Image (cartoon, rainbow over all chains, first blue to last red; front, side, top):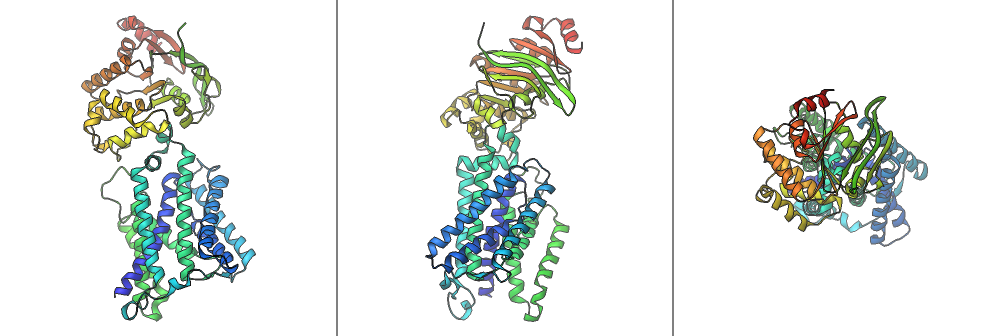
Amino acid sequence: MLQTIINAVGLGATYALMAVGIGLVFGVLRLINFAYGQLIMAGAFSLALTSAKGWPEWASVLTCVAVVVALSLLMELALFRPLRGASPATMLVATFAVAFLLQAIALLKFGSLGRIAIIFPGLFNPVGSGHLATVRWITVVAIICAVVAVAGLTLLLARTSIGLHMRAAATDFQTARLLGVRANRVITVAVVLSGVLAAAVSVILVVQTPQVVPTFALRDTIIVLVGVVVGGIDRLWTATLGGFSIGFATSVFTDKLPQSATDYVDSAVFGLVIVVLLLRPEGLFAPFRSRTVERV
Amino acid sequence: MPEAVLELDRLDVRYGGVPAVRALTLRVDHGEIVGLIGPNGAGKTTTLHAIMGVVRPVGGDIRLAGRSIRGQKPERVARAGIALVPEGRRIYPQLTVDENLRLGLAAGRSRRSDLRDVRELFPILGEFGRRRAGALSGGQQQQLAIGRALAARPDVLLLDEPSLGLAPTVVDAVFQALERIRERGVTTLLVEQRAQRTVAFADRTYVLSNGEVRATLTPADADDTDRLVAAYFG
């Protein structure tokens, strides 16, 4: 039971990192970035390429962060900025287009079998024997990463001027701009932070699944997007809890269902999602009778 | 001639093909309080939005201290020295009073120490600094919205119907606050529905109708109801 819980917390933590990244951008742009998974995929391919060339692991990780952040900024400059003011549907479809474009480029460049990324292989070792034989170090690292990221972000939002500007912009961007808050600066910071989190997820997922293919992290992203909506996308903390919860539930179902029934994990999780949305359409963790919303 | 801080020069604003402001020319001199009154749909709020860069004028010019700011983004206008107290206050109810005031520093024209002046002007904002702004009464929220704008140390303060939706006694408090702002010499453009009170309070008041200036009144006209009604309703 202990290893089931630790592994579930580990997957929940990884999904929470993704949920924070998606939630941050949604907060300031009101945009659900469906291409978030392809950012993670791009980071994973950069890890595969640099590790194949024998780069030191720290250099591979830094390159991964640089690639994902650069791609995030490129998306903001080339797509989100020109489309600012467009309808949410237009922006969502645009992120779909980017997602499929990046996936198609990866398919053309690396083929459907992709590349193998060998990075921090020691983190795949179990942390102990007996009950802990199925708990791997990368699970512990994922939990630590999520705790550090959420704590750091909380401090940034609560204690710094840029954090205050982000919170204000996420609630009422027009008024924030009238007060002198620089829209592009706030959005750029959110996009960069979101990119750094995507790079962290790339590293965590690559350690767990070294085979990097063009659909890498696609399923995870869909699950997290659902989790974010189920948790309550209007607030960063509810979106994060939503991401964590769906990761936790997926892991527990995978672990506890008999081997022959694991094909039904997604059905079970998404069935639960439908029930939650029917009962709490505003989000599972959204406060009752709350009319004003702080989105980040 | 006194120094004009804010000038609108034959300003034209349209919504689609419909003119909202037509060839509007007005000036606000240093330290002056200028009123802008008129019936609903006269173009008062549109004028303020055009100044702040929320809507883009189709003609004319807007100058701050002689330099054109026409068509600039709202954040650039705020940084250039114009602060708006928007209609409906638009404070951040989920943030604390202190956090709302700190947002006034976003224009990059003032420091945290400048908030002391604002709290001196509106002591309630110091007293309730850690409260959520949404928990304040309507009048207190209006003080917060004005205080937040003043925290930017603007060259010009724009007020969009600060007494809207407030009880009569609270309206008195708002005008008392405006009196204290006048004593500090803050250049102000005041948009109001309360015609008589605004004419009596402001150094000069423009009456706007269908996007055009119909009359310019002085405090001496405040008690001349016939002139006021004629100017207001044409």
